[in-house]
Image (cartoon, rainbow, N blue to C red):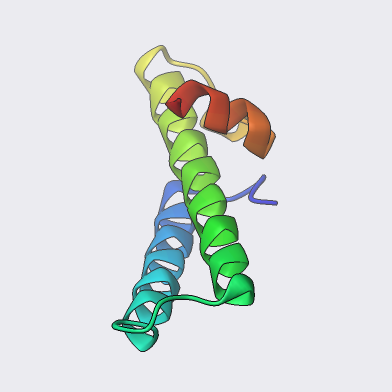
Length: 84
């Protein structure tokens, strides 16, 4: 859960998730991900989508002079439905 984080903390979290995703993909390059690896990759992708969504919400609130700390992390299914 990422509530209560500022933009920098959210971006740091995004960078950490991207680094883990990159490491996971590169460590399995050429021979594919097993079931556990695919599950972890899917979870990382979902967490990234949620983090980016929260950051966009915060920035939108700033644009309209609202408190960005009132932005809330959305359920992964809700965020994923926006992307598909």
